[in-house]
Image (cartoon, rainbow, N blue to C red; front, side, top):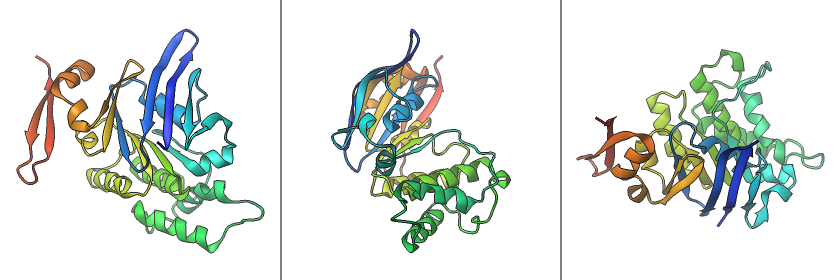
Amino acid sequence: MILQARNLGWRVGRTQIVGGVDLAVHEGETLGLVGPNGSGKSTLLRLLSGILKPTAGEVAVEGQQLGALPRRLAAQKIAYLEQQADTGEAITVRDAVELGRTPWLTPLQPWSHEDDRIVAEVLADADLHGFEKRYWATLSGGEKQRVHLARALAQRPRILLLDEPTNHLDVRHQLSILKLVAALPVTSIVALHDLNQALTCDRVGVMAGGRLVALGAPEEVLDVERIAEVFGVRASIVVDPADGARIFRLDHIR
């Protein structure tokens, strides 16, 4: 297991936001996290990334406690793409993406041709060719999201944590980003709102009330009964005649 959480929790005062999460993530898999607003998905990702310090339990990366790792080493192992991130700095797209190389730079290992190659590669992967000199303030929400993804990819992490990576993206870029993430030689944990997108993950974890209430193959944990219980909607399963894929049709419970 490349990433493990044991009895992981976080509370503010007497209010528990996340509690009792046990999670073991396989190397190379794409794990989807789904759940209604306020279920704890974003908080769990922040705990797994080390941004939040747990008030209960622990996180281990490759057998080492995350909290004991130097920040630079942790950043070489884990990249986190948050749902909402902005900057008032007058920086270009290339400047923003180059920041992803920071954990790998030292006085003895300054910027190199290899760093240039990696930045150029991730800009292309995120469909940002021609955006290199654009300033941050001129970008749309979806373009900013793609820049954030490119920055995270530039870290060359072992583990990629993504909080709603398709937020603000048009349909074409939603599909291309999810396809890119699935093809990356990294372990990915992705918080998603779209249950049909979650069906493409290797495994899915369902969050409700700050707890991980189900974990397993998408077809096992995303059944119509659990969707009704957790999300409060009625789900019908439709089979795409083109390839036999299962698709959810969602409606209000009457």
